Length: 385
Image (cartoon, rainbow, N blue to C red; front, side, top):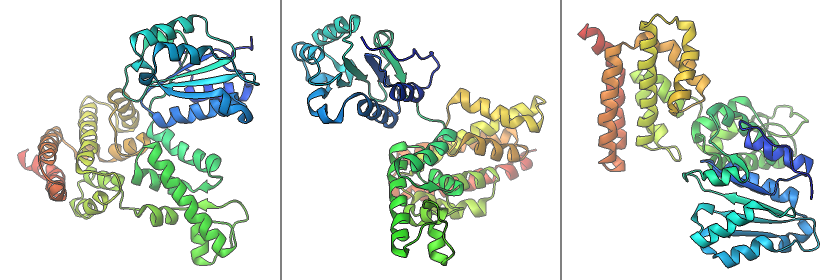
């Protein structure tokens, strides 16, 4: 029997667990992949299969099935088939909790004594309830969505490892602000950005950034770099016109700037009026929380930590990395009274209801009215005082 990979702690990152198994070429017989980030799950499956199964025999020794499509007899055959001319075979069973009763009983019997020459990957899709019995009978890998800060690091890592290209810090920030934290979308846009930069590099016969080519500057001799101009050209968003810029303008109660950004932000891919209201609501709740903490005597320099704790506890999406959001909110907390925060939340509830009952063509008008109301809360609060 081959040695098992080192047992991960309950708090171990699933990515680190997979990486450790791949590097050591030592695999546990059964892994249960669950959680709400399907992109990371698919990547882990790919990495485990690539490392565990010899490419020359993969056609004979790798199976991928959907649990709802197989009966107990078929599953038993798949689980008990030995590897062909190889050390190990693999079975990926997707949507494992959809197994019929008899098939699940077959799986449970196998899990009591799993084969040492089979790598079994049990996969639950996002939104599925965790199967505690499978957790206990396997190496459990829980793939929760990355925090915005980790997404920023993931962008840099993915560009360098998967695309063999660098990305400037401001370009990664702009891309995340424009696309959000969906790793599928980010990977697709990164691939486009890389193709754009490498295409420019080939046309110019040089290396360097997109800006180097545009300005005829002396290129860097290192590998190509995605810069903010490349992101703007590919994704169609410019610096200063992102969702984060809109949120910050509303937090500052800068109506003039915020109104000009509504059309730009709504025109970006995958951005809807309801999503903007959700992010504004997270911001309004955060500012209400910050106002309460200040009223309780918490000093301003403690607010960033307080906002981090708020986001961790509530799980709200602030529309940008937590550190950026906490910094922006700390700067404007004193502008927001308790009455202003309460009024903002009422306006956001009304806008959310209106957006869900109207056509897309009216979304921009509803958002503009909402933002004017939010930016007027400071004046209204002062008048009420």
